[in-house]
Image (cartoon, helix red, strand yellow):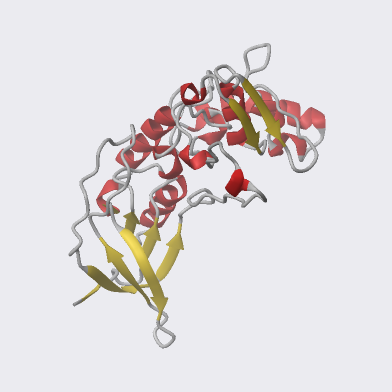
Amino acid sequence: MVTTVTASDGKKHFIIIGAGASGLTLMRQLTSLGHSVSCFETLPVIGGVYAKSYENTILTTSSLLTAYSEFSDGKEDQPKFWTDQEYLDYLKGYADKFGLFEHINFRTSVLKVQKCPETGKWTAWIKRNRHVPPHRAYGEVPEENPEEPVEEIAGFDGLCICTGTNTWACRPKFDGEDSFKGRIIHSELYNRPMDYEGKKVLVVGAGESGSDICNEISRYADKCGICIRGKHGHIIPRIQKDGRVTDLNTNRCRYSNPYVFGNWIGWATPILKRMSV
């Protein structure tokens, strides 16, 4: 059986895959223009990667630069680096304000999409009631029914893929790892630093996750090192000595302009955001 979606006159109906930060704001923008949307999210909650992150996750951009321009947390004069749970709470407030939950199909995976060359319309094949591993953001999830049918939904005018860049782990294969007697995991499987107490740990990569994980594991492990393939970057604290969030001085808006102008932006940004509320 095929279900066909339709849009109101002069408007379009879009399929959105993923209810993380990108999927939510895309839903908001499309519905504000009068279009209709159907969003499919495998997890039982919104938030994407932040709804399956490790215990002590802290965002790498401050609340001032992470928040949507049309939805304030009311604390522009006191920016901070949100924890993953604080960010999920913020996203929930955003979704509540703009009525986005009514468009989301949770625990639903999109298995296939196909565009009709004649009509230009998109068809999606979905499966509902999916099982995902438990997480502190949503708890236990019921097991799947192996007889759950695959549904076919046709008539979408546009396809929006909002699955993010960190949905699937990219784990390299190392020469000789088969004879390695220790454990090798990707940060996707990392949860808390206490699990590495008394161990010797090597962290490969100095991106956001690698830097944070190395920092917290080093407080528990017997020994901890970090390995970087290319030249080292600059690992700086999130908070400056004067208490200000560091990304007020490191964001692209500042350094794409003359320094004096960039310095003014760092000072004026929180004031302007308060005025726009």
